[in-house]
Image 1 (cartoon, rainbow, N blue to C red):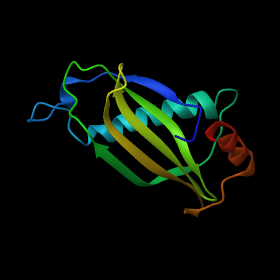
Image 2 (tube, helix red, strand yellow):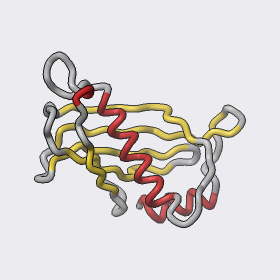
Image 3 (spheres, one colour):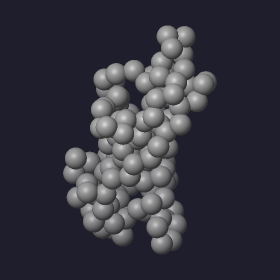
Image 4 (cartoon, rainbow, N blue to C red):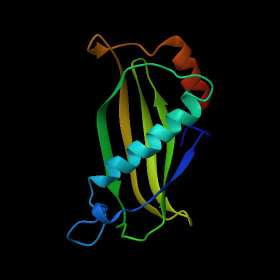
Length: 133
């Protein structure tokens, strides 16, 4: 983990998160990552004033380590793991209160201007560097 700035968000497992196999459907993990990512951005990017930038996800990856079931108490841990010229990575882990890992993931987040990748704005790169490394 690169960042000391980690957001930990509790995830409430909903009944409709569960698939026919009795565990959380794999697609829901991207939703849990999104919840963590948005909370991270609210907490660290927009703590004092809103930052308006266009960011899209260019890549998402998930490694599943164990099943999550209805009633499990889990948390998504979110942090910045890489900062590039036009993009940065959020990394995630879904864990229980004892630190047992259920899944790990990463999204590559690209800055967009006029529909094309754009350089990370300087003020935001400074902010990302400060909170991310």
